[in-house]
Length: 260
Image 1 (tube, rainbow, N blue to C red):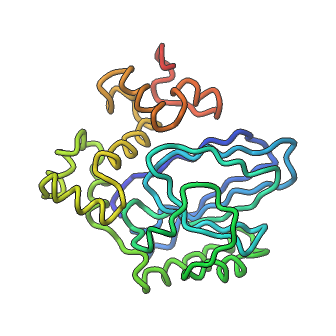
Image 2 (image 1 turned 135 degrees about the horizontal axis):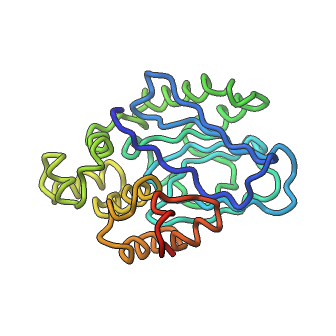
């Protein structure tokens, strides 16, 4: 995928040697559909519950709970962030797909804590059992095999429309820009994006712009400071200043005044 779209790492309430987060790039044949394979785990029990603040990014994840091999699922946020309490001990592994790539059953997608056994048609539980006991660096061939299975069965497909949008985010400031880039009318774009991603163009643009704000100055993306703060708080539940203080995240404009 000719894109530099890289969703930010979500907010962690604790950052310590007892919590490990890692990512691995997919093999080249899956680079058009998979952003990363990822792992989030505790190395020892934590003194307090771990809160995971997930920020919307339009990506779909396949998630595996390595502490309970029957627990797995398909996850994606809607247009607002959510905070998940993972407790004091956890071990999750996942596959993060680029926006628009997942073409499986949308009724399976969950936007909340996944704590129940998976009973769907995907081979998530057998995959979870295969992953059990492996080091993260040894999991990539199994995760890649699952993605290839999903591709062969029509659940995953490279999406030229969303790929072109992600590759030219810097040139898109409105839904009209997005439609022009895609060579579609705004009505056609609305229908096509709904079908491919589950999101309306306006909602998709809001999420992509929010993700960009973690790496670009907000005035490159929003009309002014007030617009940025309002849009950020609406989607994330914090002002940028509050989010920085809560999760230790810095923004490109942090050298400027008044980003609260």
